[in-house]
Length: 429
Image 1 (cartoon, rainbow, N blue to C red):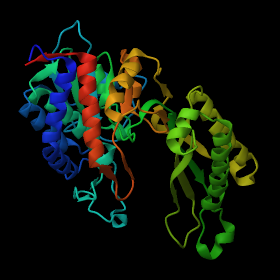
Image 2 (cartoon, rainbow, N blue to C red):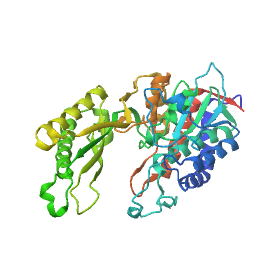
Image 3 (tube, rainbow, N blue to C red):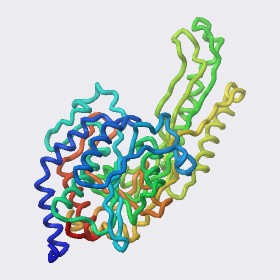
Image 4 (cartoon, rainbow, N blue to C red):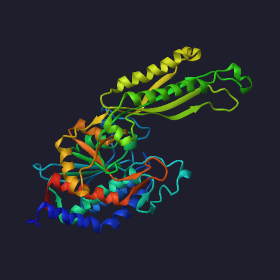
């Protein structure tokens, strides 16, 4: 094998990927069938740990420690502990003179509710017409499987990366990543680049917008329904704020265009979403309290502090125009997700190397885009690690009947395997 050139090495690896397709699909189905909701990732991580050990990797399975991540500016507090929620890291040591790489993915998924809206069992791992259905199939267990089988094919073909390779399955990405990707960086896992196969439809993502969560509370005056005219209904007062925030969403969308983000989202660079609305507690009582929880996105170039001020000023303006709210001001609380926009320079050698490596597999260089959600790549700049996202095709992630295209998992597996060889170099086992 010492006489092989890289082209022949990659050909052998691709042949192995083709041979492994049936096992790849079977493994993906098994992983989708393991519920791994945020906060309950243990069973899926044990499954991943077993696969890495079968491949002969040195494996570091560890739970994040709050004291090691809580003071980092990107940390987001979550309502559950890190106990029984490990990250799983496989390590292949390499030459310090060769380039290193992190291949990362998250195992956690969001709730499948309402389950009655699904045609397929969200934990069934069913296959129809070349599509694997289930919660997390696209976001992002399909990508995790591509990570796994890319490395497996390299090793089974008799090769290994020349540079150090760090393989990560992390928890908590959907809730902010503090106990997952951030914990891995804080533990010392850094490299010359990071690859994450989030569901990007085989596009290259190099940006995401900023994200903030906020909660608005309004008090009313309770009264019996038979005397409702003597009370003040918090629902009606909150509706004024609701409508003002919808208007702000439309205004911001028009005033803050950003081409790479718009390409990925069908024309919108930023959104303000009202995600929950709770009010009152009894049909025969005037609602004395109303609460809304919202998420606002903002584009590169904006600062989170300025976006907060904009939201607070809109709510204050509504309050000033209403006698009750003027005397009983709405309370605004910023909580949960908070991240500034992430931008990876597309001219960076790491990105350019990937474009060059992927083009022969795809038939052309992947299209470069941004993403209007949050990604674990945002932690990289704090630890000197450039990164990007390139993942499989599918649809309906975070929605009913989520699916990933099986052929696309295999395509991403090929792209990643070739990039590992091109970026890290290779040695014969």
